[in-house]
Amino acid sequence: MDESPAPSPENPPFGHRDARSRVDTAAERAGAGLAPVDVGGRSASRALRDSEALFRSIVTQAAAGVAHIELDGRITLANARFALIAGHATDALVGTSLFALVHPDDQGRNVDAFRRLAADGTPFEMEMRYLRGDGDVVWVSASVTAVLDAVARPTAAVAIVLDVSDRRHTEQALRESEKRLRQARAAEQALETSRAELVQALVDNRRARAEAGAASHVKDRFLAILSHELRTPLTPVVIALHSLERDSELPSSLRGTVELIRRNVRAELTLIDDLLDVTRISSGKLEMSRARTDMHEVAHAAADVCAGDFAAKRQRIGLTLHATRHEVAGDAARLQQVVWNLLKNAAKFTPDEGEIKVVSSNVDNRFVLIVADTGIGIASDALPAIFDAFAQEGPWVTSEFGGLGLGLAIAKATVEAHHGSLVAASGGRNQGATFTIELPLD
Image (cartoon, rainbow, N blue to C red; front, side, top):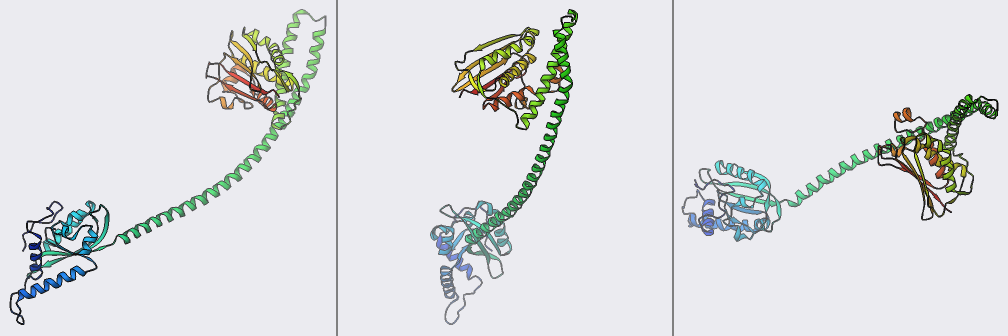
């Protein structure tokens, strides 16, 4: 038996014998077991040479790649087709280790199978990747059979190799196509589910909007009725207070009490008017008159109305009205209510001896009025909802400062009805607040 070392990727690609001696040895092994007896006048050695020539002719013309391999993995004979598949010249392959052609990821199992063949002659078939001389990878199907001597011991191996790259690529493309197809059933199902969910969401949204609209209508009707019912009993109170204030015989000790009642009644009437305005705004029935209105006069009038609030807390009010154009087309009473609301808000949320500023200017073709204070400020997460009706920054605001949270909502709706804008800004808690009104001049 040949004492060649067991094949492995580490075996040197070239043997110690030259290519011709290896081919001769292969031929001798192919004819091993034949005795040199005379057959028809020809010796066994002549028959062996003829057999070798026939073998070479068949191998050379074979459509499949054929290689004769020693048990250590060295190639001793390769036909043109095998060289074409492997991507190397035929002469360069002779003496090269077969395992050097195999892709590293497939090398281990190929070596293991070849070791079994070298040990007991077990043939094997395997699909693997060859690394071509040009760097490309080719998929091959290899069928490897042992060459046995007279006592059935492996002396060499013959590998028949087919290029199956096209089939492998087709199978891979098919798998990817099937995967994409599965992903497209899944996507279609998801789309169908999303469509059904969207339809249901639209139905739910339509139902919710209808319910919200009905609830809003009920709320507006309730507020209108409530406002009317609250105003009705206050009317005789206002008349009685007016009579008492004009009564010369009213003791001076009671005039302070009458004034207290009058202020509270006025506050109640203001709240009622705010409720009515909210219902008008939500129903789109907030009425506005249009006339030339001097916004500087509006600012002065609103400041005069709030003078008592400023004085009670010893707050400083400063008016810096520098706008050169300050007449707008609008409802003077409604716009005064806006500025009054902002000043009342500033006075309410600014501590004693704080400062409130009113500044006017012109930006492009607009009148700008800013009301700024040094009060408690507005938290950043509360700013987006600051103009919502009944909105307060938290229960603590209502308990500490009172109010229904309607003033800013009414102010914003009024300004927007004049085709203007009202925005709020604050640096955060205890950083004060700034409200900016912009109104078109034309």
